[in-house]
Length: 609
Ligand SMILES: O=C(O)c1ccccc1N[C@@H]1O[C@H](COP(=O)(O)O)[C@@H](O)[C@H]1O
Image (cartoon, rainbow, N blue to C red; front, top):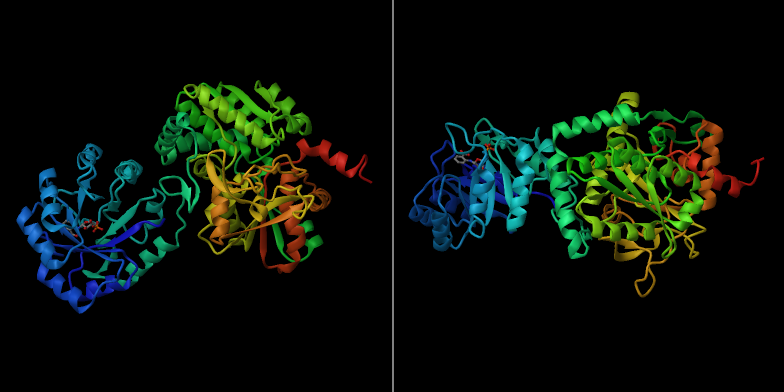
């Protein structure tokens, strides 16, 4: 959901008309002493001359005014919301509510005790504004406060189930930065002025930026209807604890510094951006670039998220890591991180995947992890995840569940996406440095969807086509595939609502793919949302198509990709020709194929002649 936009401080009929013409949902007037002060009679006249839009609400700002005057002026001006912007008491706020029948918002000025102050107005204030107070002014200062504090205000407002607008020095230029803190609303006065008048261009730019900025999930962890927290009561505490811990490090510079150090000095980031010249020539059409996540320590993008969650686990004082794994890459990444940070590690893995990924199982054990073989269901990733959740329920106090993809209950899909966004952020920078523009299209394979989400997310507000590739296995017309978005229906699995492969009765259908990392019957909820809103296009390619593309990359670029990654490459093989040479197709090369050599050998036969 996009944040609420309030444009405040209309001082003339012209200002008011400009605000009405925008998409702002609140229009504010200052009744307190200020250069922007207006009279209730003026507001009443202006609104009669030009009615505001049906969704717009009129807000009156008062500072330490008497209850009688607030009531009288708000009735005269026809206000929907009275904003108490001074040190009005609980009794005064209650009396204004009673006297006007309007909603009353309380402004809290950011300071050490602000959160406690906010708590005191619970069940009394209908909303909050958090603003900066200076020595000379209660508001309209044009001065920002420390935005790192925003998540705690938002969290408290969400707990009280009321809106919370962020005010103080918001401008078109710092809006993008502010949005990183996911405010529920913004309240602007001086930032939309030029020469002491409201500036229509600034107002338009601001509402456009807010409305066009993709913002998900909401505070309940929902991406549109998808995501959420569908877990037993016993896990709610653990998820809330994790959510709090994540919010506390999300914008923390010290955490960012530690993580950056690990990613750089341990994993080898930034990973390379490779121009695949010979492959581009061979396919004809698009100029192909590869984002080389295969060059990460442990051979895939999984380590980005594992290092970040490992650091978070340590910060939370957990001593044990558990993880689920399919292809084994996330298991190896988790075992690696546990060894690096001195924690114990249990990896849950389906018996079928253990058979297919023998080498990775050996690696995990070598790294000191205990690999727990799961024999239920189809003995693959879904079943391993079920077991990991069961173990977590019983050991929540000292155990951190390190989920390897953008799946599971909130906050995992958001947190894993954010930790993997380094892929897209680096790509964006590298593309700009290398060719001075963004790619025309980006392609990534999708199982749960973490490499794709990490690659796509930083480009989501850009004019770049985004394509996710699922596993069609032996064909989506057969029962043997893992094409969740192509063939699935809405349902709940592993704590969140998404698309799932299920039969008429809602039983999960065992997925199939040659690639152990893609045969998951669900998909990250954000992918489900992005597909439904039309921002990302999803297609499916078969085992055979993936294996053919895998060989091309080996033979034309000297790179052995993971079979998962080869699905994205198959799309490139089929579509590069539709593009011209001056168009750039960027592929997330999510992992290397050393772990798959055994499977590849079996499929292609002995010596591959
Ligand atoms: O705008 C004013 O003059 C004003 C005076 C007294 C109290 C509040 C006032 N404005 C409020 O300040 C914030 C945002 O202002 P800015 O963007 O930093 O200029 C907003 O809540 C206004 O309602």
